[in-house]
Length: 166
Image 1 (cartoon, rainbow, N blue to C red):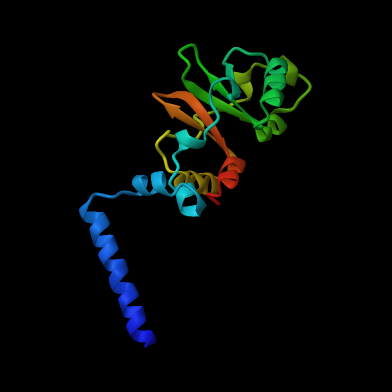
Image 2 (cartoon, helix red, strand yellow):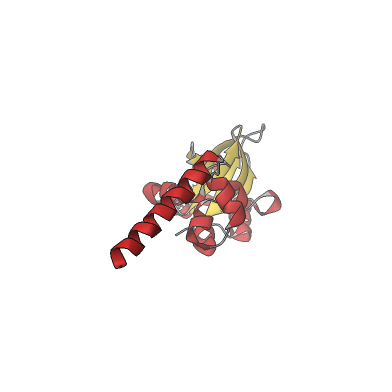
């Protein structure tokens, strides 16, 4: 009796999957109908979970380090994105960059002198499971979301933990 019950269950699952595929049911459809849980969380996109607008830790490339430190502290992400005159993300300052550049004339520098150029970025349509993998494999805690080289959001590792993607 247990074998036949198991076979019936497997056959039912196979029929359900075949029906879903024939109707074009996608992972995004699943996310709409079942947003909770780990699977639903892993199907959210970067755009769904990113911080944006006034919460973004962004500084112009001519900002002095004292002002940059204040801004970085206010935003609370432990990073500061550096943009050029066209709002393109050209660099990033992390806590590690601060430690590496500390010197007697540190406060006389501009952000360009301290930043790491060409930061790692992601697109807004990247799934949160892929964002988590990217952050883990890159050994970073935050990543900027960019569109046309311009920062539109930021995701911190804690955001992924909060939604249950990890």
